Length: 90
Image (cartoon, rainbow, N blue to C red; front, side, top):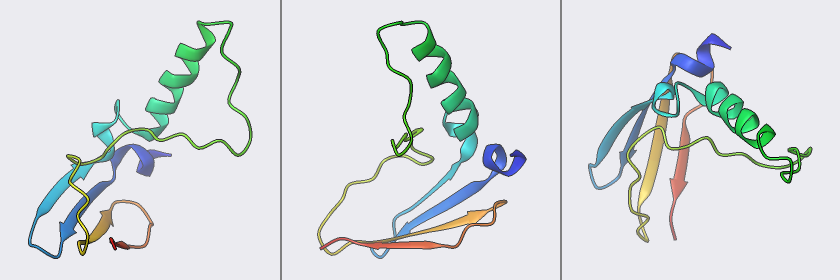
């Protein structure tokens, strides 16, 4: 749980662009963002609860970057046991 609030990321593109980010950039961390969402939903009786299989995005850890054809983005994580990710845009 501590790792979900404290990890950092390095986002790099094959054009040399780099952005650094942290879990704390999303309302203090992904778990805190989810707690905020659930508490806010509870204030409105017309909201249905989250259901199994629904996806919740908690926000961007880095500044959002443009998606351009041919771009290859890589993200490396520090402070959490996650493998690096690579995204190639067609």
